[in-house]
Amino acid sequence: MKFFAKYTELPTSLFDDNNSGHMIARITHNVGQVAQATTDAVRKVVQEGFTALGLLVYLFYMNWQLSLVFLIVAPIIALLVQYVSKRLRLLSQRIQNSVGDMTHITSELVNGHRIVRSYGGEAYENQRFIESSLYNRRQSLKLITTGAVHNQAMQFIIAVALAFLMYMAMFLMEQASVGSFVGYLTAAFLLPRPFRQLSDANSDIQRGIVAAESLFEILDTASEPDLGHYEKPRCQGHIEFKNLSFQYPNAEDYALTDISFTAKPGQTIALVGASGGGKSTLVNLVSRFYPHQHGEIRLDDVEINDYKLANLRQHIALVNQNVILFNDTIANNIAYGGLANASRDAIIKAATDAYAIEFINKLEHGLDTLIGENGVKLSGGQRQRLALARALLKDAPLLILDEATSALDTESERYIQAALQTIMKNRTTLVIAHRLSTIENADLILVMAHGRIIERGTHNELLAQNGAYARLHALQFKENEAIAF
Image (cartoon, rainbow, N blue to C red; front, side):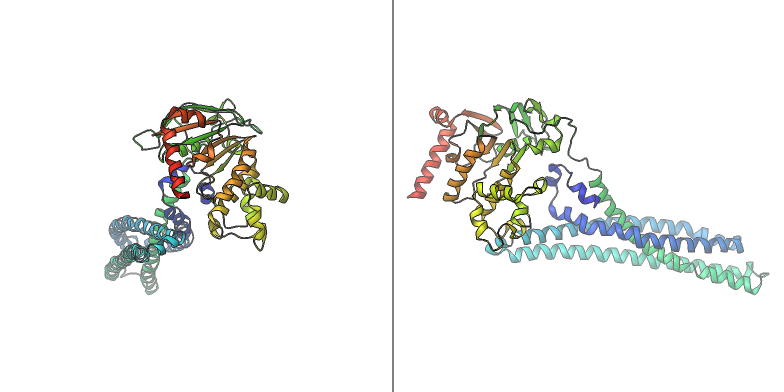
């Protein structure tokens, strides 16, 4: 539970750098390895450890000279345990990685099964999983073999020691009574069992140690930086970028360079340009998904880093091009997270304003319809309208639309655009748009390329400049004519 809670606090960059399969396997596999090491293995260590210790104390008490034979074999056993432990940790790490790979491949197949089938990828995916599974089996066999050889080698060393002990007892215990002699040898021959159990426990413990390392690596990772102290019940939506530059970790070039513009409350700022120009990066910085290094982003004349993170995001409603929905009812997807206490009437109003209520009412259970994982039972346009309804219900003063109408058909888009025009009057809106027809009424259009703003102005001003925006507009106009023809 603590580990899952940590996932909710991790920075976005960590999710970017790790594939989902390995992150899921840490919870589904690695935690189980730690649990086994800290329950069964610890029980064995305590129980058999005290048994072995008790027997050794008794043997040294009965005849310390004869018992010195155990001190002779102790270094040999210690070296054996050290070598085997190191190998067990190596093999356990490989197994954990292979489990992560198998989980990742399975996850991709489950989520992308339509593409797999459409492009005849069944054999390819099967081969990927077979290779990963066979690798896992090879490492598992090596792990079991190492444990078995270790166990038998230790038993052999102890057997040799006991044989030597029994031989020496003939000479060193000549004066002992029959009871003492038999008691001593009985205690000595009881030793192999606890040592064998300790050897088995060591295998579980080594696996647990490796699993724990991967867990503590995440638990020790710094959460999203949240050093802000400023809070505000509701901001006005005045946002200003001042000489902002941003570079992703380990990247050679800057994703954004010297970005400066101002959006007044209620204004709509459109970001256009070719893919890779830095548009999505720019809006991600507003929500502090990534920390900016140079320049400022000010919301209501306060640097966004000075806001408490939760309070900052409370002022922002985000609608991505890739809509994320949850395996729950439509109502719970609209009233998600901090919106969970919203009234039924408010949910219906948000769905109505997003032109989603029409298709919702046609469903058998209406707002209580389960939509499947990521809304698989809905069309692309329906999923997008639910995302818009969620943003409308949040009623945040700052609205970010990342191609929010891309999956809508022409009729739905016209209704949504009409609804958005009304909604945007009271909100500062940042719009990323590839369809230039959707942002002709924007207060300011920023044309971006290679992380820089190369043109800025209204729709008519940019057309008059006859620059990059005019070329994009002409190109789309020709494409629309071709499609209509």
